[in-house]
Image (cartoon, rainbow, N blue to C red; front, side):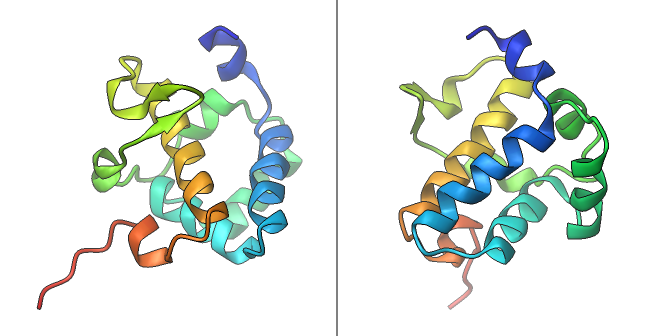
Length: 120
């Protein structure tokens, strides 16, 4: 699938897929929302609004209130591609979300998913 097709997909069609992936593995809707909020800055009420509007995946990411600067700490493979090596910034942000949801579904602790830094 080329990037443009992904960018034009409706967020309202993608969100349930992301949510169901986590729910099937025993995670919660609130955890999915927390991951999305950490990455994009969207609050749950903002996401509810976008689900009822026809927001493209491109618009979802390009209009995000505050993309988390720590997202560059997300490493690993999604769809056979290392996320840190994706050149297109929009596609990289999309794959960051995919990677976070994968980590959630695999049972990783929220502190690790959200790349929390500890001061001991």
